[in-house]
Image 1 (tube, rainbow, N blue to C red):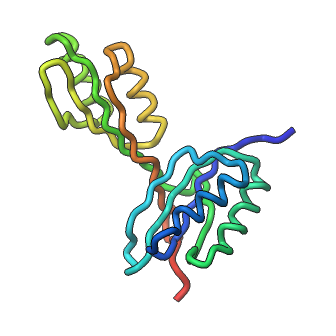
Image 2 (image 1 turned 90 degrees about the horizontal axis):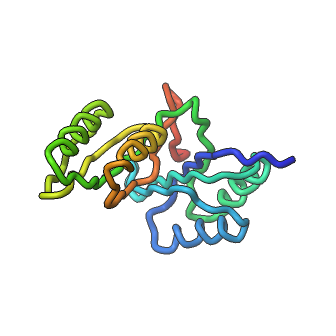
Image 3 (image 1 turned 135 degrees about the vertical axis):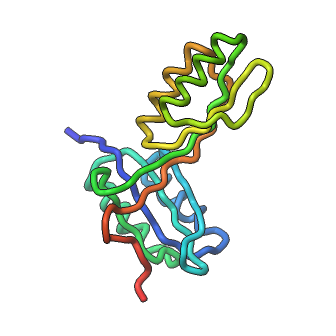
Amino acid sequence: MVVEESHIIVALVEDKPGVMFRISSLIRRRGFNIDSIAVGKTEHEGLSRITMTMKGDKKIVEQLIKQLAKIVEVVKISELKEDEAVIRELALVKVHAPDHAARSDIIQYASIFRGRIVDVARDSLTIEIVGAPSKIVAFTNLMRSYGLEEIAKTGIVAVSRGPKAIKPKT
């Protein structure tokens, strides 16, 4: 029986056009679906960091990482274990708030989840919430009863705990 686990793959890549296309094409050809992806510049000039999450069999993901490492612009690639990483996601959650009572409840819940109200409209509130993906899910599930109008999420970003770091070879 094949067990599909969640995997966090981090890649340092050259900041060039077409790199994302080559990476996502290879993943697609292998039959994987990327659950989340976040890309941003790093502390190293000319390099970007890609953090992807996907579900799959451990051995197949290991093979995928080996194949991704063969892409010329991939400088370094590795898998992060959830228990050995700091993982965060950002979400903007727009919630229907038609009256004072609902608005008050939503503000209280946002405070409990350490969220911030970033926009107030006549019939809605937009809350910024940052944390582990499970925290984002718990908050959005709680807000469903008020009426979710819109959700925008960044995808996760992650770094190794402690002194370990994903750095290019120098």
